[in-house]
Length: 473
Image (cartoon, rainbow, N blue to C red; front, side, top):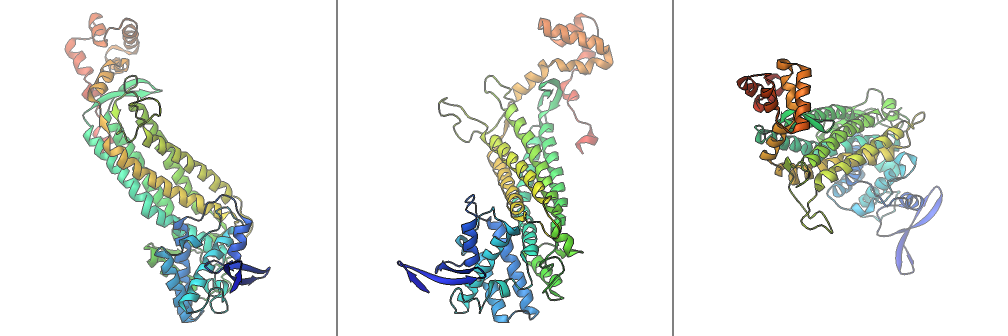
């Protein structure tokens, strides 16, 4: 250690020379250089992504120890260091900006250095004594940024989906289904082109949203299956250079147990290293979910508009005052927030597609952008759906009288008259109603187009808005 102006430093060396590293730091010289090179956004690696990288290092340390590639005591120390990080320690040591170059080498070496230095401490040695435990020769044995980072993206995305998005999406579906049952007997005016249309059940509107989200859940689950195919073991270029013959299968088995997912080695490691298609596929499924969440959010806001001069067919639960100047105003803030997050997810997807297309030859160097955008998309959309469900969807109430009044006053009810009086007669009835203010029933009876009994049956709102059983089931 070297004392400099009241601070304690250690000296570390790399191929470019020597640097002073704060003695308290678990990162090393390569991380320091990356911090200096990339002071871009202030965004640090997502905890889920850090965990994914550390899980890989734990699995590889176990595999390489069992296969005799690194000494048993070093393997055990690396595993213990990894477990400490996974338990929440040393989180402030992962410091490289999200926007970095080199396919993620800077973050990768940050992880290697932290685990190496903590392993050294556990073995009773000083940080920086890389002859004993090396970030490259031990923590990174048989590995490369080029196979570790795409594997970490896969694991991080899988964990984020299982932990955050899938539960939140399932809860949103359940909440909408519950509201569908609650509102099933409420008839409202349908609207197409934002104009009056034939009547529908309020409950079926909610049931449709639930079905839409259910379909998205299936799509994302299917897309995520490709994330379970790993290129770990491909080493620098997909050839498996410097790896044990049993390493690839062994590390996939270990990672499968660690995250409780059926992971398996890719049939062609070079292909798994070069193609970012699995990430684009999942991101595209996320974008697809996001665009429908935008539509649902807009619908909720429109149906809640008012309270005096809007539709106000439903009431979204007020969660905070809505205006700094207008007293008593409450805004649909949860739906608004959802829309903004969905726009961010859609933007992330575009960046992911561009980054995925930017690979050359054996490697795609844009993986750091893909890693952050994909995992962040999953997490923020999952968190958004969770908040929307508990603070909005579950508390929605219906304005039954307002819904019925709109349905009864809609000129689109003449649609049900078409089979009985013909399209042209029905159009004439609608025109007269709009011009005179008379009800459709009054005009039909005055013109002698139908009997009152037949008209009452045809214009039965309950019957008009009922869904065929085949569509309900």
